[in-house]
Image (cartoon, rainbow, N blue to C red):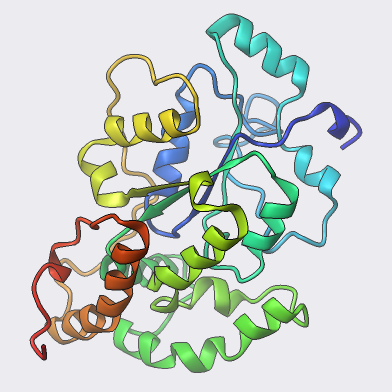
Length: 285
């Protein structure tokens, strides 16, 4: 923090979605020779791997701006990296930023030049994966059906209280809002209004899983950064065990729940998500 004035804001911030492949994308970007790791890095402390995110704009906003900037490389470090590789950039990934009701406003005020990366995953798959992750971590003890039924009561009015500043953090809002976090349109509208569509780099998780090099290239190109050298193969990180086959009733219910949101998303972004379950018309249409 003592050297925060010598540090620059991140060039890229991956803002979500949770369980959309954000960890894998961030670790892949770390393989770029021009990327400076977050501070402190695993080279300086006995960490298993480098830090991924600061969570400043969601759960750590009570900390200072200097604290946030202390996580990124100094100008001198960036200059040395640029001399060696031809460029230098920094990044962080805090996937709760997309859904948190105040994160977009906070980030827009603090980071006027940063590009924000959004990875969108099939909302049904994301919902199930989020539940599976919390089950794996021992946080969730309910079945998927029961957890979905309990979601509204668990989360309550946390979104309104967080937005109004009467609640600082909410574990249920972040970790047990399985279906709510898969309704992307409202969250994206909030970010578009705050930072502008031109500063959002929107990619799809499914495209990343099938062509990681292509998606990484599009992210770097949109941010004005040099391409990743060589051919790149990605590793799927932070996977959580889940049912091999989703219950057909839950699948159908979630598909119809998210269908209007996907339609709104498609119209708003001018992009067609590669989510096959929504390519089939609704049986009630």
